Length: 142
Length: 149
Image (tube, rainbow over all chains, first blue to last red; front, side, top):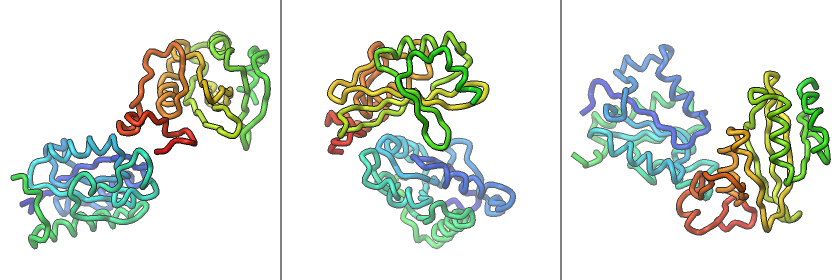
């Protein structure tokens, strides 16, 4: 399991950039995520946790599924923001599928429009706790 | 406004002048003049003197026409003027300017894909540039007001 250094991958499936700057903020020294071993993966093929922001459009949904399939197991998904949870205000549009869980299995949802950086970091830490307690279902692809 | 003064040589093309609040000039022209207008614009300002930042097409079913707004940014002032024209809704066809102003290409592709405005002479027009596949298969133009999607 990813006990020591969960590496993050951040993917924007059609966000307004609001959630993205909050996600980027947690990687700054102010929040210092490296005290938990959390850092950015250089490639999705090195990533453990996929952070999805934005409503999943039909075109981005295909790319999201492909990115998820390229990640090594075990892998987990955190949906950040109202749009990634349910589609948000874009739900029902002709080009939007809905939330990230329509395409990939999501373990943690962080609500907000956008959520505070503390909330995003807290969501990732909650996921790590749940993993160590064995409460998160694995993707099952191993 | 200094930048709008630059458009003086093109005065003859404009049938109506207005503005969008607070102070963006809107200049209307006839759709058949579009190529001559942009050719003159390139001649007057030079290829580095402006760019087309976007082309916004709007469906106006009550008026029976499609409005086409070319957002032209004048450099180096970075002032935006809107060049506006109207096309009949049942046959929205206009000549392409993407060979004169390459920046117009994505705007033209978008207006074709989402509203069905045909830009004659643009070889890159295709469905599915922005619209998702299922909408393309239905043959719908999603930004038309009577679209079912």
